[in-house]
Image (cartoon, rainbow, N blue to C red):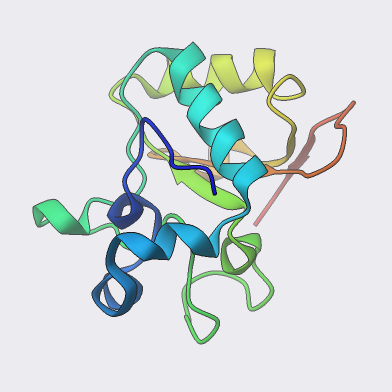
Length: 137
């Protein structure tokens, strides 16, 4: 089991999942996805936020979403634990980094940036990515 260096379980799951499983909720993710997310953060070298509910913030569905979650698409990759809505103080820098490095980090799909002004939706893949797909919601 891979334990991320840069992210804690509560940053990756919603309030109810964390309340039920605590730090063990990290086991709901594929090790490769956690490793890619950690490496992304390490190379990006800036703070990245996903969920902030543990600190009183409003984000709880930016990582893994429960199957019954009404936020987003019914078959969202968030429900598979491979999609994350990344937030940073410098969103332009984050967007540029994603454009330049998406294949390196095996990011298969990215929601078009003009539809996500305050976050970047990225979906990691378990296979080799040679061409990242940008999609509209």
